[in-house]
Amino acid sequence: MRYGYGIATRPPLATPETVARLAAEAEACGFSALSVADHILPPYDARDPYPYTVGGAPPWDRSGAVLEQIAYMAFLTGLSKTLRVITGVMVVPLRNPAVTAKMIATIDYLSNGRVTVGCGVGWESAEFAATGAAPFAARGRVTDEYIRLWKELWTAERPAFKGEFVSFADLPFAPKPVQKPHPPIWIGGEGDAALSRTVRLGDGWYPINSNGRHPLNTPERYGAANKRLDDLARAAGRDPAAIDRALIVFDYDERAAENIETGARKAFTGTHIQIADDIQRYRDHGLEHLTLRIPGRTVDEIAGHMERFADRVASRVR
Image (cartoon, rainbow, N blue to C red):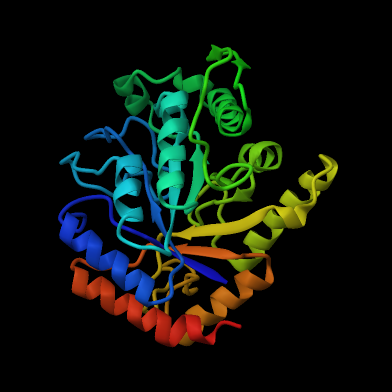
């Protein structure tokens, strides 16, 4: 099992000094990657429901303070020689695809191949309008096309592309990414559209556990979704074993949190033994890479949680 840490993207936890310490703590505690969330202009009041909280309210304040994902990744790769950096996940349609391809290739080149590109279609229409992105209603088609364009730029000797939203011919693109054929592309999302996109365009699947419409909040539910992905891969002529299986968990908590309605403990909460058992059961259902949002209001508090996770949880997982 590989572990990623969902690093803070908002001050006051995301400053040059705090980020450097959090990255060092993650590396020292055996995490293999830093995962960076994505928003450019998060609205004060979301027009569309946030998929990953009960009630649909986004889990941030009204300040709008957030670091830009790709620039942040470049900074993070300079803090370590071993940690991978994952876009967790990038809202693909928000950025110019050719410029994005160049930035990712540059970071991969300078980091000697430590980038994984997690890709999502987005959920907030106001952010699309504010950034001048492609139409929100077309975001699925846009995402598919942009990923195909990236692959063309990253792999072709003389890239050329003709699509619905972008076309070009015979343009140079160098340097190419260090990773061959290109940095791994992990597809975010939990529903059938995300599973289909994973099979068609992805090297891995990178969902979140807490989507109310498509919950992956038990090992059995995650396993059922993985089986669905296996079936789709075989139907498309792909080897299911070639697709990485990952998961982002927002609600990791070292306390015995119980559901008010059912009294059931939530996965990834409770005692260290209970959480280790959760991880083992998810692993038995196909999970290979677990990204955790470690709770804490201060760097010291987060560092303490990381150290306890390494000593008391990860050490118990086979």
